[in-house]
Image (cartoon, rainbow, N blue to C red; front, side, top):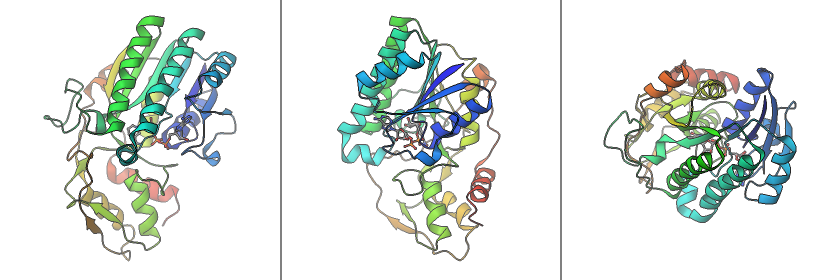
Length: 306
Ligand code: NAD
């Protein structure tokens, strides 16, 4: 199958590219390397360095490739960055998505797979673990941009008749995550603690997230090629992991590293989050295989930290 993966030089996208190539698909990557790296690129993928906001470039590339599937992972994906300066996030995540939908519709794609967010789209949810029935009340421009993109996908799917699957991800961690970014607490903590540097928790350590190892996300994206029809589904383990638990789990690998420092909470970040993924199991036959501790242990080993 011919597949375009946008953001395929980034963390999650590059892991998905590797899996698709391993499964025998013809993969093209679109990425402007804003936050992706050439070293993440699979040499068997055709790489187009381009900005998804550039409609002309998207038309040229997508018309040439004629993919059956666009798997859209390119985005400005950092909540704090979006609060500091909302417009670039809104532009890339909404207008960029519209460009892909428009041209994808014109060339007759069969399916659009999208990386949305469960962590930022529900806001401070009333119910935990949160299901897809929860109202979407984002509290950051990043969450809002993903919500708008979801609406655009449903609209273009109606207009052009292609299928779609929207994933609402939890906090993903694993290989290829940028340890020097502003998001990706597991990668940042591991990198700093491995080098004996202190880390910061914003708040008192009680803020929670649902963490998922990237291998489980990849597995869902593999299944999404065949299953899931015009549907929006959560991925998650339904387990809350606090910032303090993240620190303690990682610090165990680096016992001589300094203890954590605490700083005031940052606005726009929800207090608690975890996602119920029953619909993903029902729709895709998907179940997570890794828990937080085994995922961290695998990541630490892959990075040769210990
Ligand atoms: P990432 O920053 O590592 O990857 C995003 C990629 O998109 C980068 O390679 C970047 O260069 C590329 N990109 C950014 N702007 C672009 C543009 N204008 N044109 C072309 N390429 C562009 O982030 P990630 O963590 O791998 O996230 C991938 C996707 O998953 C994003 O859509 C993100 O919103 C979503 N997501 C991630 C998480 C998580 O925990 N990492 C959680 C929920 C949703």
